[in-house]
Length: 78
Image (cartoon, rainbow, N blue to C red):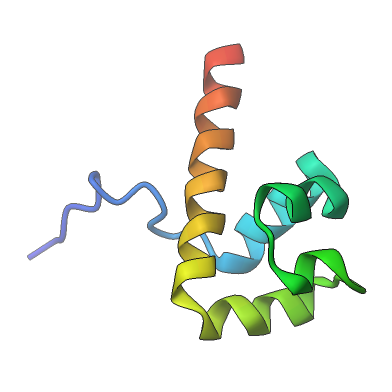
């Protein structure tokens, strides 16, 4: 039996990939403005941010929502 993941837009996308995409598009400064968490504002790195996001569900949710908005924005542009 196969599972339908069509309603899960983040299926198969790692948190690291999401974070790297956001940093590449926005940069750490803008990302810290959009999601006010210390790991984005002070001495940011992918590894420290991943560690924090994996332990902090509310912050991870904000990052995932921002990624989905970015993805929609890119799809509209074509």
